[in-house]
Image 1 (cartoon, helix red, strand yellow):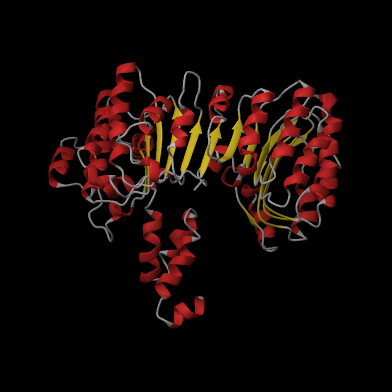
Image 2: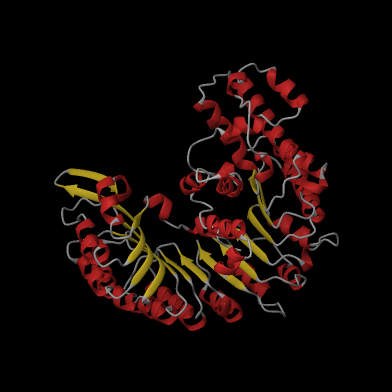
Length: 520
């Protein structure tokens, strides 16, 4: 395929497919733009498609955007007389046209960080006025450039001018009419009247979109969801295929079965840390069509009866599961895990963050039951009582023999004692992990150790991972220090010689919220 593209003259297309693999690797993309003009032209759009979410700490993109403001906005900008020397005079590309992802809550913080980086000092009233002016100017700039947004995140917190943003979007319906595929709604306000105004405007925005594929509802946006999807003006029935509920309280919400019945192409539903799920389940089981629940991450457990009804309805669709609280009811824990084992055979992403409570055999049964599909496994064993350590020890000693031979991602958060990590790594010598993330958590005991020598012996020398991150707590007597392997440059070079790329723990660790970004 690659050879045929080269021979047919499709080299730019082939190079772009390669560069796309570095979409979120900003340092590599910066290297790409230095190769030649072709590589630069292909890499620049990827660097500028989501600038407000880049974590490099460089906010100079703000002043580059300001270069493109129209004359009226530039005239008003000059009234502040504080940034003339900061504005870029020449640019090579139309950078505003490349934006594809826009989160309204990240604009103001980015402007504020840009001002701080350039030591711009203003009195408090003028700062808010200036930041909001820049915010609105950037929104107008994107609209004027007729950008092709893929994702729009409307978040009201950290954004003091959300009303104005919604209003100007409504005044320019072409901005969102056909292009936006993904919409995230997270709405909080100081009063019911504010919420009503925002709700009405957001509803108009959604109804004007002709091709919405994915929507995320967060916090108190569920009433909006309810009224929206039951509205005769809604275009979602034949376009919406993914719904994510995050931190939603289903209390006092009804007609969920009617809403889901009229969504004709819905392929996946994701529930992330929601409340009153027993009420949700009682409505969902009334559905006459399949309910394709793909993700279930629990903050509060359902009643056993409700969980069984939900899994009977949707367990075969469930691909991502996490349980993030500690419980002391052994019987309930056993029933809970047994239901997951009985009904959920297709889990790909498993996040376990619970006290073990003598249920190690059930944990191994669950992993064994799903190992043919399991790609991502995250286990947090750091929060246990001293009398539970025998169960932790059992998991560490037997986990290696239970894991799939190949795993895309393994994360372990542990309080590690002498010999236990060695046993784990020895027993998993036949396993390959594309990404291995380990956090050795704080303890007062000298028995807790530096795990790096064991990683070198059983992982590095055997080349059993592609990407590695370790956050370690080293304890020598009364001295304690936290060490990220990524900061140990000589060690990083040593791992590189074995074709293992070391990254920082924070960058490589995939929490549930970061996992959300991977949902199509």
